[in-house]
Image 1 (tube, rainbow, N blue to C red):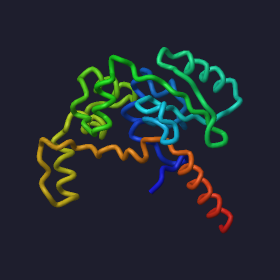
Image 2: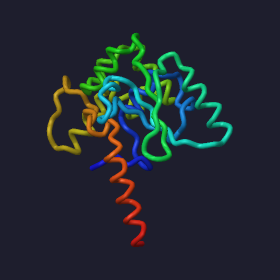
Image 3: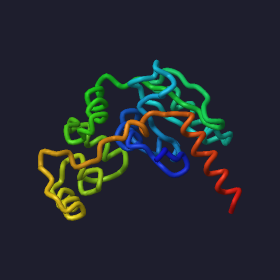
Image 4: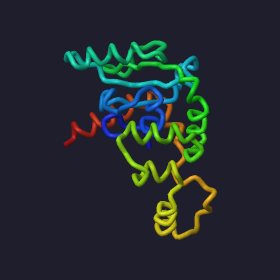
Length: 186
């Protein structure tokens, strides 16, 4: 299943976007975070932030703050009305970035776990907190759903689907075309 810009957020938006700031409100609510662009090898192992272009004053002011971030590298137009901002991974958090790519959420350092929760204004008893800290209740919930025991050494969060975590303009356009085609017949 392809990623849907209007409905889905990547796991990178949850676990990687906090590398760039302290609060989710500092970023457009309809933004999406990616680990790279399948059509641009030079952006492998970067943080890509896809935002919808707008002309309102709030957006213009906040776009400037996103571009002034120390990690900002460049930007490019994509997918019609969208802009992709490209950032370098902060050196301090590189290990966490690569642990995320492997789905090893519980191995993030404690400071970064707290940063992720604070960024989203969540506590350790939230779903994300339970994944980060391998909460026993989440194991039990999944065991009940799946009907099998889960080893406590196993990460409890789903592995990132790297096909969805890398931006692919061709796939985005296909989803958009399917949606438009479907809406024409309603």
